[in-house]
Image 1: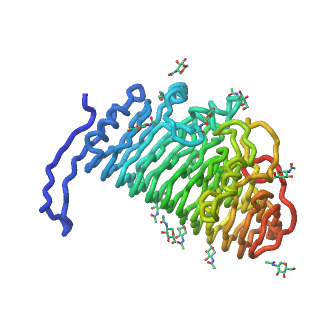
Image 2: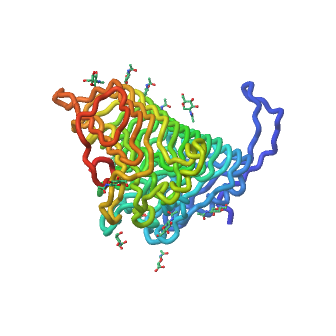
Image 3: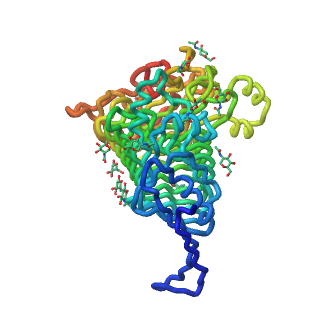
Length: 446
Ligand SMILES: *[C@@H]1O[C@H](CO)[C@@H](O)[C@H](O)[C@H]1NC(C)=O
Ligand SMILES: *[C@@H]1O[C@H](CO)[C@@H](O)[C@H](O)[C@H]1NC(C)=O
Ligand SMILES: *[C@@H]1O[C@H](CO)[C@@H](O)[C@H](O)[C@H]1NC(C)=O
Ligand SMILES: *[C@@H]1O[C@H](CO)[C@@H](O)[C@H](O)[C@H]1NC(C)=O
Ligand SMILES: *[C@@H]1O[C@H](CO)[C@@H](O)[C@H](O)[C@H]1NC(C)=O
Ligand SMILES: *[C@@H]1O[C@H](CO)[C@@H](O)[C@H](O)[C@H]1NC(C)=O
Ligand SMILES: *[C@@H]1O[C@H](CO)[C@@H](O)[C@H](O)[C@H]1NC(C)=O
Ligand SMILES: *[C@@H]1O[C@H](CO)[C@@H](O)[C@H](O)[C@H]1NC(C)=O
Ligand SMILES: *[C@@H]1O[C@H](CO)[C@@H](O)[C@H](O)[C@H]1NC(C)=O
Ligand SMILES: *[C@@H]1O[C@H](CO)[C@@H](O)[C@H](O)[C@H]1NC(C)=O
Ligand SMILES: *[C@@H]1O[C@H](CO)[C@@H](O)[C@H](O)[C@H]1NC(C)=O
Ligand SMILES: *[C@@H]1O[C@H](CO)[C@@H](O)[C@H](O)[C@H]1NC(C)=O
């Protein structure tokens, strides 16, 4: 039984309304069954099959109940108007068994959306609700809480190209709110994320994560969460984050990265401007794994660009080495405002490990290089004396880190003064005042 109205209007290319040519599109209006005992996912998939190419899919201002995975990858030139709420089911065992592979770090997801020229608009009223309170309570009772296998991201944009996602709210995501993988030329504008738990605090609820993606814009985001506000991971290129406010999480993260033994990864060309960090741990932090591999992703790993691979590289030309070298580089952070940060405003830890990963290991042997990073103009308040904590690799020291016009104060007006440096070469705009804490870390610092 078709659970959507199928309206097909033939193209009348000569029709002009208000001076604009109007091309009628094949339109599917999705109907909800209205109860969480009936799954609306099949009807939604049908609508995208019928109208997902050169068409339009409309969700009415009502609640749609989703109790099964959706993998919608074939979109092409489609408008998706979401006026209602998509609400995910609370059957945790089902999701643990059935969540879809994201394609990195053994992460999984409830919903994959991909294709070319997708315009997903929530008009400031559309809501993607992960029903995460159930997950936050459940995970708090587990032995291992970090990156629990099968715990799904709310949505994964996979292979989304030339697309715009706007005016949407994401509430209580099951885990990470969204992952973007193999995406190109995507604008994510006016997005509101609130992963604050109503019963217990949420964890692992990143605002967004980019992987193997380029030319991505995050503009006008508001994120309340319990992990990275936005995190750029392996092979993120040309990513801009602008005019946004991040609350309660860990701030903007580069990484974790360097988790795959012998694999080369980059994060390059990142521009961040006009961001407020309110009650976050850091403003900006970097996290890379060490050269030693312990276990497998998501919670274990390490050895990004391992030593075996390096010995092959030594025989290669400079240009080949440049592209083969793992790095985070060419990043600009301007006009950052902080309100009561908890930790170092700018932090680098090259000794990443998550709970459950064994071994204390060596914190200064990472082959991953961090270079050419500039922060300009950061003001506001902090509860930490640390402006910067740079725990860098001795093997590939951080290079060319610039910090200019940083004015952070405690609430009583005393300025924060510490710039802690380990293996940070050619600092610009500041002098190091001491050594950082060196030790295993999931969130920067020790
Ligand atoms: C359906 O909704 C009820 C009431 O909110 C909730 O207790 C139950 O867990 C939900 N079931 C599913 C499968 O989402
Ligand atoms: C999940 O998988 C387990 C083990 O295979 C099985 O016992 C259980 O019935 C499954 N639950 C659901 C809801 O699919
Ligand atoms: C999603 O569907 C595409 C084909 O449309 C398939 O190639 C891909 O493997 C599916 N992804 C998952 C995680 O099942
Ligand atoms: C997933 O985990 C398995 C072992 O648990 C590991 O062999 C594999 O490399 C991991 N895959 C990814 C993509 O991280
Ligand atoms: C910014 O996003 C919010 C939703 O979080 C929206 O209400 C507001 O209109 C957007 N502002 C602009 C200038 O688009
Ligand atoms: C975020 O969600 C929490 C929990 O429901 C709620 O208390 C809080 O008011 C919400 N914040 C905003 C800004 O909507
Ligand atoms: C990011 O901003 C820079 C500088 O304004 C611009 O050159 C670049 O094209 C922008 N990238 C994206 C993906 O919008
Ligand atoms: C900075 O971002 C805020 C939203 O967080 C916006 O209201 C403000 O207009 C932006 N300022 C500039 C100079 O663009
Ligand atoms: C510094 O950033 C603040 C926002 O945090 C902005 O209001 C101010 O204009 C910026 N100053 C300069 C010189 O750009
Ligand atoms: C928790 O993590 C530890 C260390 O990785 C592992 O040995 C143990 O099996 C995990 N427990 C569960 C229930 O997954
Ligand atoms: C860590 O590894 C580096 C590079 O192999 C080595 O130079 C350094 O001595 C090691 N440090 C410790 C404490 O083992
Ligand atoms: C760093 O210290 C040198 C020597 O004391 C001093 O000349 C320079 O002005 C200092 N730089 C900054 C940014 O404080």
